[in-house]
Image (cartoon, rainbow, N blue to C red):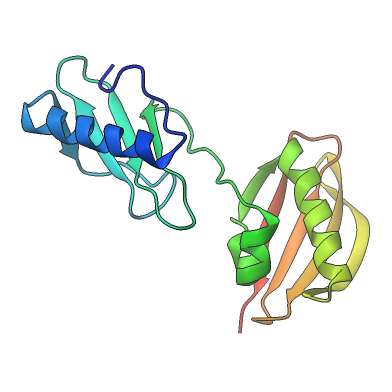
Length: 171
């Protein structure tokens, strides 16, 4: 493994990690490569361990993001991004990544949307109603972001593995 036995929990951990990574690159043990896709953010960096051939993604910290370092299986589907109420509250609904959402995030998104409606940060345009999407029964709701007037559709599939969050209208 390129950087052994180091968990990044504090700023001092990150400082040690950054120095070890730089030393690995300088001695040829690691080489920075072109990003193969985006996992965390546009600023992430990708490295290959020149001995094992393993590929790693590195996201350096800033005031809103914790550092991230993990081995990447390039054949694995891109993981869904994390989000929280704080980032949504400051950036509107655009802070929520569009696309498929797993069951746990479906419940969390439902709760966040309910809270945002109560705080009048967003409005419900079309109340939750049942629809059939193929062979799966789904609940479809439409929301308007009060900051941008962009409309989003939340399709909850209680019996399916995934729900979806998509933009349906943008001025």
